[in-house]
Amino acid sequence: DDAALHVDDKWGAAFAVADEVRAALASALGGRARDYALDANTHALVTRFLSALPLTKRRHLVSTSGEFHTLHRQLRRLAEEGVRVTLVDPSPVDTLAERLAAAVTADTAAVLCSSVLFETSSLVPGLGELAARCRESSVPLLIDAYHHFVAVPFDRAAIGDDVFVLG
Image (cartoon, rainbow, N blue to C red):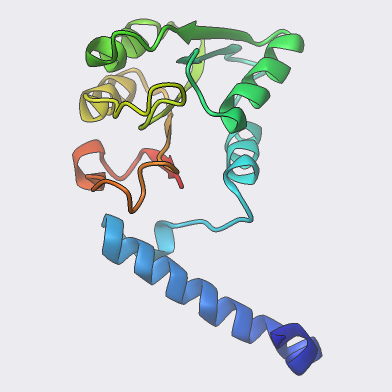
C-alpha cells in the first residue's frame, strides 16, 4: 500500500518502519538498534553471512547435523564446492556447545548453529561458553535463534555483542 501511495517517495516510509523494527528488536533482545540487520528471511541472512567469510583462505565450517533447512542446505552446497564442513552430532545436547568448540581448527572460517535443535526442539545450553571459545580463536559464531525468539527468553547479553544472531 505504501509503495502505491508514495510511489517514488516510499523509501522514507520503509526506512522509518525498519528503524522501528530494529528498535523493537533491541528492546526485546538487548544491544543497539543499529546493530540489527533486516532481510526477508533467515536464508538471506545466512547467505549474506557466508558471503562475507574468507572461504578461499579458511575452508572449514563447523555446525551440527541437527540444523534447520536454512543452514543445512547452504552447508551441504558449500561442501559440494570443496569447503570442509564438520557436522557435530547434536546428541547429547548438554555437551553440544563444548563439542562444537572442540571441532574448531586453525582453518575454521565460522561456527554456525541453532539455539533450538530441529529434530528435538531442545534448547542448546552453553552458547555463552561457545561464543567465548570462538572469540578466543577469532572465529565468527552465527546462532540461528529463529525458533527461540519470542517462544523462550533469549539472553543476548550472555553471548556477547560480537555474535551474529539470526531470527
